[in-house]
Image 1: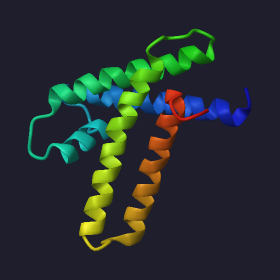
Image 2 (image 1 turned 90 degrees about the vertical axis):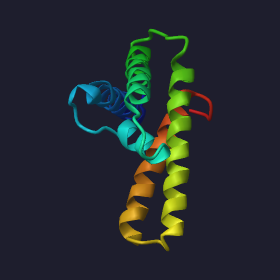
Image 3 (image 1 turned 180 degrees about the vertical axis):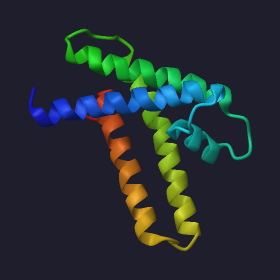
Image 4 (image 1 turned 45 degrees about the vertical axis):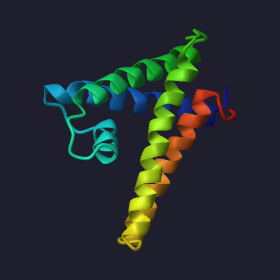
Length: 134
């Protein structure tokens, strides 16, 4: 495996595990993770604790499955779990884009930077899911 592919897989796995744990720990006083922010944006003013926890568990399992795959241990549902997270991320990116456009492109460079980051995460999730190439 090439060093770039190795680092990419490690980074996606660590990102999923870290955000998953933040989602799991949030109801117990943890920090806001990306899933808390995403579901806060999708479902404004509602209690998303259970949903964030469920997606957090999925993310931890998906991240661990990527690491296990690097050790030649396959997890049958890995692609599906990662794809579920990619769909959630895509909805978040679209909502962010709509919000940015309707605001008249406020804070242009900052929002462009955030869009770039979230698009890279989405692309990594889609590639890791195996649904859109490797």
